[in-house]
Image (tube, rainbow, N blue to C red; front, top):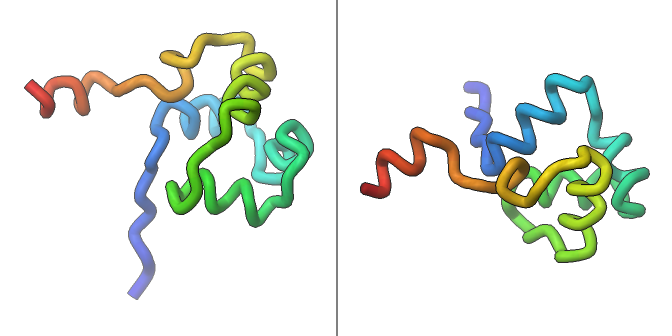
Length: 78
C-alpha cells in the first residue's frame, strides 16, 4: 500500500511545483542537504528563521504567501 502524501505547507508546495523546483534547488538555496529539505517539507523538522527568510527572498514574496493558512484551513478554524 502506497503512503499518502501529506502536504504540510500547501502554499510553499504550490510555488515549488509551479516553478518546477526540486529538493535539490531548495538544498542549494538553503545551504542544507536534500534530506534536511525533505524533513522540513514533511514537517518533521521546523524551518529555521534564516531558511524562511532565504525562501521569501528566493520567491520575492511575504511569509504569508509561503506559509500562511489556506482558505480551507481558515474556514475549518472558524
